Amino acid sequence: MQKIAEWAEGDLEPKDIKILMDALSQVHKINLTSPSDKPTESGIAAELLSYFDTEQLHEWSELEAQQDAILEAVQAYKLEQEQGIKSIRKKG
Image 1 (cartoon, one colour):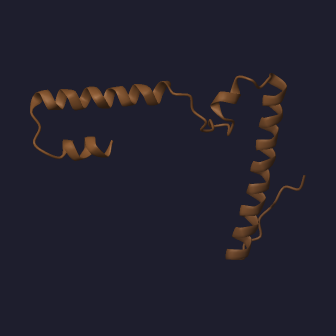
Image 2: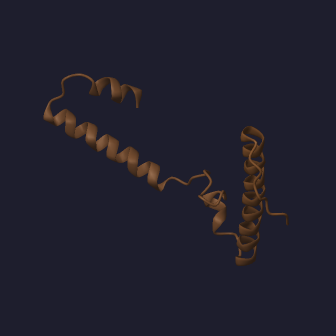
Image 3: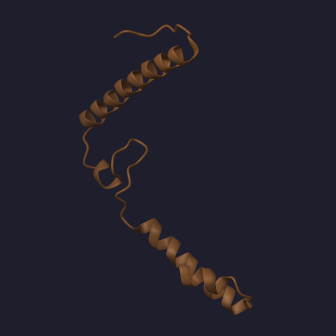
């Protein structure tokens, strides 16, 4: 990719632009079709998501909800400490 970027900085003829666009299109296709080990929005790796059953996904969702509740309480405490504001925190 570095070589392509260096090559593209110069004055390009229309045929060179076409070659560059074709090369970038191929890179894009490869990136779209390659398996990804990056997590999805849920935090689960895309390659593992299809192996979760409904119950496991529900459990995962409940864990995320618990995590959100903990973060919310910590953020409220932080705000209270920084600004001296007493906030109502859910106890559960």
